[in-house]
Length: 322
Image (cartoon, rainbow, N blue to C red; front, top):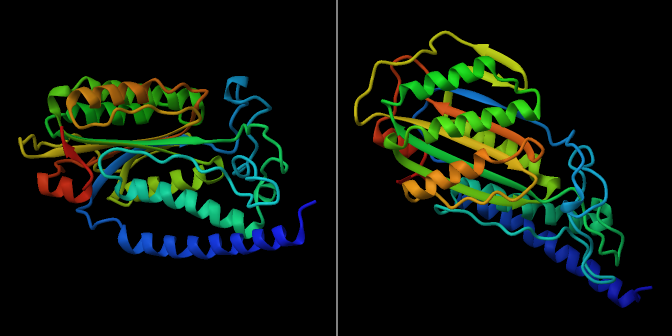
């Protein structure tokens, strides 16, 4: 049994981590925030579930499938009688991070704060003290890829609306078809790629759903209305969604792909056309068994709407010229 001295030291360290985590969250909110954007209509296709994920094969580390809900923390305690909190997942990305990197970071910081306040790994659903058994409920890779295309890619808008009208977004197989069709549609227009950005990070399963939802809301908040939607099997089509007339060389269409996967997603970035092509192919290859959630968001979607260069880069400040 641990001595009273080591127990007291562990309690003091847990309190210290809890006090440090809160200022980090507040400071992050002050330093990183969404920039004001020019809003236009948009479309959205998506769905998925972090609660009804099928069992994972033994190659994931053995031992059963994903549990319901957030599924608890990841990993066990650190040392005997020490601090028990989830294992830190590496965070990495491309293009400077921005809001994406901030939200992924805050997901991990928040999970640590909750763990140390709750007394360690077992309270978060972790392995028993001293156990090295791997967990089946993490980590989760979340990737975001955005492309700014010349507005002459009007056929892409039509393809996405047609996909929204026919896709089955209530199943993983249907969502994987949406992911493949969207990446293929983008790959067919390399001559229209002008701006792009790609970021990816890993978070514990316990915070994956909340992180994905925050990222989705951040992108959806850039739309003043959603004209075409097909989400979790529910379709809507509002008046005004039709191919516009503006094909000016200075006008753009923005497409965002947000993907959550059980397996790591290896993106090369999007600093040039070759990297963007490779990243699109990597996203399109995510299997239905690994796909946890998907969002495809495009803007604008209304007749005659398009972005100027200034409007595009104001709404999507992390994009870089391809």
